[in-house]
Every structure is written in C-alpha cells, then in structure tokens.
Image 1 (cartoon, one colour):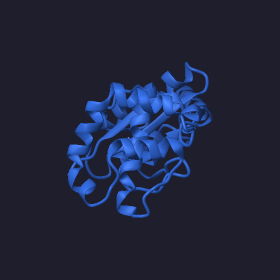
Image 2: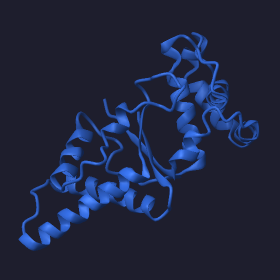
Image 3: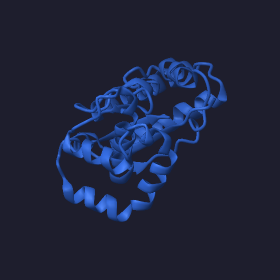
Image 4: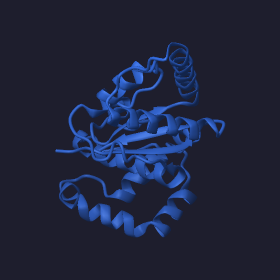
Length: 206
C-alpha cells in the first residue's frame, strides 16, 4: 500500500492560531465556497460517519472552535483532515512529486539523505508522526508535522556549510539519484519559506 505527502507553505503561527479562533466568518466562507468538497468527503467517509464520526463541516467547526471533540479515538481522523483543509485553503501547495506516492520507509531514506548532507534540523519523516496543534486529539492518519522558520533557517545553514565543504574537498556524499531529487525538493520547500518572513512548512502523510 502506498502513501502520499501533502506539503503547504504558510505562516505556521497564524495557521496554528486558527485552531480555537472561533472564526465563524472563515467557517462560512469555507461552507459557501467549498461545500462540494465537504460533501465529497462526507460521501467518501460515509461508513465512518454512519458509525458516529463527525461530518466534514462539523469536524471543521470543532477545530476552529477548539472543540467539542468526539470521545471516540476512531473519530479523531476527521479533525486531522479538517486541519489539513485549513492548511490547504490558507497556504500554498508545494510540489510533492518526489513523495506522492511513496512506499515503505521512503521518508526515513530521504532523512538519511538529508543527514548525509549535514541537514539534521528538519525531517520529512516528522510529517508522519508530529502532533496536531492542541487541543486537537491525536490521530495516526493523517500524520502531521511542521518545519518552523527557525528550523528551516538552521537546515539551510547546515546545507550551505556542507556545500562549502564539498567545494573545498571535491567530494560529495554518494547518494542515489532519486534521493538527491527528493532532498533537493525539500531544499526548494525551505527556500520558498525563507523568502517569506514568518513562513514555514506544514506537511501531512496519508
């Protein structure tokens, strides 16, 4: 079974602040402009909703209002998808072609490639196990994680230091071409974020 990674460029702090913001105007815009998307998701998760999981809009409203949330942990996935919807509507979707679809331990393989280039401040695997913003309940799927502006700055500094060392030695770490492509895609995400003060990256693994 394959997985996918959706990655967004956005103001991380502002996005997290949407949780519990009680912004009913935002909710109304989403319901008006994206009602078809909500209905499509309800159809896709119809079996779970029939078993008591909240419909898409109800989950979204709970996220924006900071609750109430279902006590059933099997329903928590809907709040994860609702947060992902907020990110998709307020952020910019980043090229994920090196990560969607992917199989097995690909994210950890790419992390090894990042580490080989001296980059340890960020991790793509963290997009699979990071927590959602409080007070959202934990859910395994979708997994979610974020690269804050500070971590991105540190990661790019690490990358530049490695580039200088490679230029001086003439020897680059031996990496498979597909790993190089994925690492460079990560570098691209970070450069986009660095160009916009306060912006970072939030990713979701499905």
